[in-house]
Length: 231
Length: 403
Image (cartoon, rainbow over all chains, first blue to last red; front, side, top):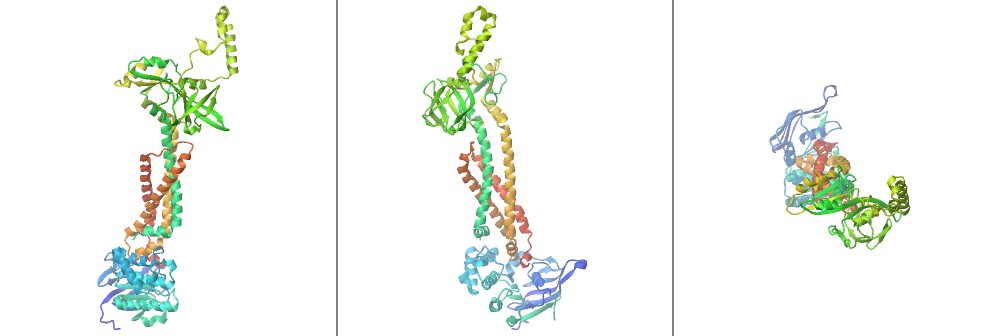
C-alpha cells in the first residue's frame, strides 16, 4: 500500500525523552521523528532497551516528552513537555491501547470491559451494549461476551482487549508486544486483526513487536536502536 | 456502569465478611449509646412515672435516690396540710439481695402508700395491681418471679400478683412494689433472737436509770413490742411525694415547705438533675469516652479496609486512567464502596443489636435520634475513611499498567 499520499494521523517531531539527571541520566528516546498515515499499520522493532516502549508511552500521551512535539489528527497535543490539550480526554477519544497482557478489568465481563471504554466516553449504556457486542462479534469472541476475563483463554482475552481499544473508534491504536503471551497461531491471528482494523477502520496502528514471523502483515517497519530510529 | 457494585459482586465473600465484622464493631458503638440511654432512663424512671411535683426529703440530703434519706412517716400528714397540696404519699425505697435457685436475686423494694396508691400507675404487663393491704407484691419482669408464686421475705410470704415491664433501679436491679407497711416490714425485719436481745438490753438500761427503779411498771413495758413504746416512733420513710392541686404553682408549695427546718424539698427537675449529674455521671462519661474510642477505632479499621481494597485495584485503576477515565469514575468506585460498606455494616449492627441487646443484663435503649446521629457519623466515617484510598488512587500513574 502506498502511504505517501495519505493524510497523516500521527506525527512525531524530534521527540526526546530523558530519565534521571547528571550521571544517572538515561536518554531513552532521542530526536525521533516519523509519521503514521490513516489506515497504515507500522511495526516498531528493536532490541530490548532500544526505547520502543518509552516511545509508545510518549505517543500514547502517558508521559510527556522533554522536547519535541506530538500531533494527532493535526492537533498538537504535546509541545516539548507542555500538554496543549486535555490529555486524558484526548486519550479517551483518539487513542486505543493493547498490551502484552490484556489488562482487562477482572471484575467485568468481556462485554462490560468493552462497554466501559465506551461509557467512559459518554456513550449511553443502551448503545454501548449493542456496539460492544458488534465489536466482539467482529473479533470472533461474541459467544464469550458474558464471561469474566479469568474464564477466557489468552487469545480470547487479547481479542477482547483489541475490542476495547477499538471501542471509541480511535484514530491511533498503540500495541506493545500484543502477541508475546500468545502461541504462534494466535499471535498471527491478532496481528492480522490489527491489519484488518487499520485498513477497515482507517486507523493508524503502531505495533511494538519482536515477532519477525509476522512482519509481512505490516505496511512499514521502523527499527529503533539506542533511542533512535534507524534510517 | 456501576463499577463498585460489579467489584463487590466479584469479591462477594470478602465484602460480606468485612461488612459483618464492621457491623459488629458498629453494634458495639450502638450498644454503648443504648446502655448510656438505658442508664439515664433507669435512673429517672420512677421520677418520670410518679410525676410528682415535689419531693420532700431529710434536711440537707439529696435523697432518696442520690443518697439515703430518713424522715418520719407522719411528715406525710404535715405536708398534706400545706395549702395547695393535692396528695402526699410516703415513699420507701431500699435494695435487698436474696438467694433464689442458688443465684443472687437483687430487688429494689418500693413502698406504695396504701390505700391511696395501689400501683395503678405502674406499667403492668401481666396480672393486676395490689388488692390487699398486706402480703402482695408487683414484681418487674426482669426479676423472673412468676405470678402466683409466694416468696418469703423476712418472716412473711408475699404473693406475686402482677408484673411490670422495664421498671428497674438506677443500679439496674428489678423493682418490686409492696404496700408501704410491707416494704418497711421487709426493710426493718429483725430475727426473733435479735428482738429478744434488744428487749433485754432495754430492760437492763431502764433498770440503771432512777426512773426505772422508781417506776417498775415502765420496766415491764420495755419487754413488750417496740410499737407499743411511745418513746420509739414508727419506722421512718425515705421521702414524701407531693402532687399539687390544679391551678397552684408547685413553687408556691415549695416556698412553704422549704422553711421547715427538718426537711429539704426539691422539684422533679432537681431530682432528675441529682440523678443524672450525680449517680450516673461517671458511668455516662465513661460510656461516652468509650463510645468515642470505638468510633475512632471503627474509622481507622474502615480506612484500612478501604485502603487495602484500593491497593488491590491499583492496576485496574491505572488501566482506567490509561483508557481515559475521569477522576470522578475512580472516585465513585471507591466512595460508593465505602458508603455501601458503611450503610450495610450499620444495617448489620442494627439487626444483630435487635436480637442481642435484649439479652444484655441491663437495659439497652435505642432512641431514634441516637440511631440517626450514628447513621450520620457512619456516613461521615465512610467518606473520611475513603479519602486515603482515593488519594492513593488519584496518584496512580497510567503507565503503571506497563510495569
